[in-house]
Image (cartoon, rainbow, N blue to C red; front, side, top):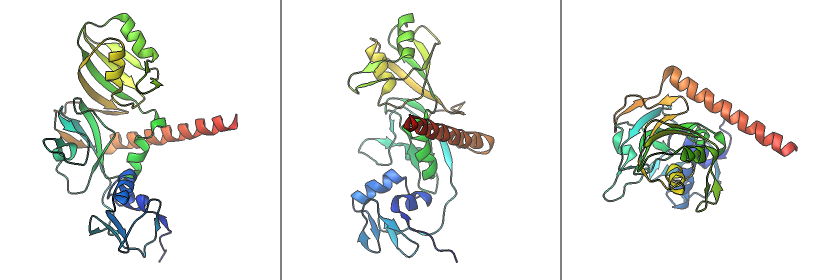
Length: 255
């Protein structure tokens, strides 16, 4: 029988659908992972001879089916696996036997499409800042849109609190106070900050698309599995973006 080579603990847990690599590192720092009865350390490698326990439960060899779920997050729901007093988290919306975790974030005050998964590899790929994955939003602001607002948003805005300038994006006016925007970044509260810099306040914000996956007719709180051609296109798109990112990095290093 072929022996499992030593691999990093966080990858081991991600491959088995226990949690993401980032979550594994957090649990390690909190002392909630034991390897052979001893608290794990960051960067630790393990082999098949080692016993791994997470929150007191032994991690077995069974690898659950890898799933990707699309959820229409309502306003007021937080995108976290933790539960805080008086708040409802994203996991409470989905009745699924395996442990899931959200990919990316939406503000508590925002709504729309977000992914849940038990596939650590998928989670890592889609959250890479260099991936340039398209995300489309429908936005309503507090007063009528001007042509200068559209142009400023598209060109990019320097956000002093983040000390970053937003990347060029696509903005399309859909009403007196409504527009759609397609981003390839994921800065903290990016659209709200951009609009505020232009003298506008966002009143509603809904994410309607991530790459090829559309929110469609799902109502707030509803969810569905991403399967078939839709899943195939999503994963192949991630591979293309990942390969493109590596190529740009290598080209930059060669200069």
